[in-house]
Amino acid sequence: MNIFRRKPKQLDLTALEDSELVLLAKNDQTAFGVLYERYIEKIYKYIYYRTGNHQDAEDLTAAVFHRAMAHIENYTERGVPFQAWLYRIAHNLVANWHRDRGRRKIIPLEEFIGPDLHFDSPDSATEDKEERTALLAAIARLPEERQQLLYLKFVSNLSNAEVGEILDRTEGAIKSLYHRTLLALRDDIEMQHTRVGAPGRTPAANSEIKRTEGN
Image (tube, rainbow, N blue to C red; front, side, top):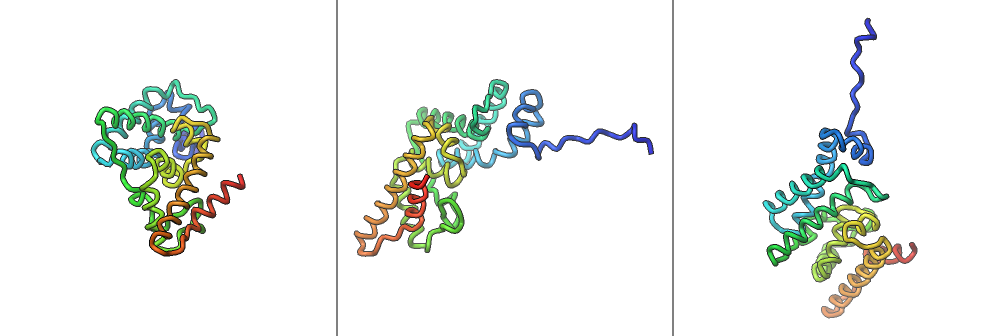
């Protein structure tokens, strides 16, 4: 056996962290391709949620990654993960898209959330279909920014710091907005139940409110 003819072991890019891939991607398109595959579906779903149109979502998603690739040399993490930077680009492109068209369409969160709608873990899933329906209806009545906050928290599973980077707010401001949003959801659901003479049941929202109050 001739050990001197052995080929060097190739680096498995898919096993690398985002921060490592970003450094490589500044000079290696293959590394950027791994980042692309890692986040293409998430970014597409977010844009489709904001636009409600598959073709526009595909076009805008492509634009996000084209812009990211063109500016990755200047990207600095600043303590916020790479995916938050992608979401921020997507957020800005969608905002421009809406401004150019003068219209807004948001797909209901129900399309993106599975049958066990939950806040932080499967253990806090809503008790039954009736409660789930009430919660989704209450979410639909929220202002757009608060709906987007819930999407980023529950569908994209982003931290407050990451959401703040996307929405151009501080981590503390996002935490406060998140708490107020949960309170608004709870009050809305309780009011709706009172109108129909049924007791308000919002265990998922209440448990998450208690958790945020404890932080």
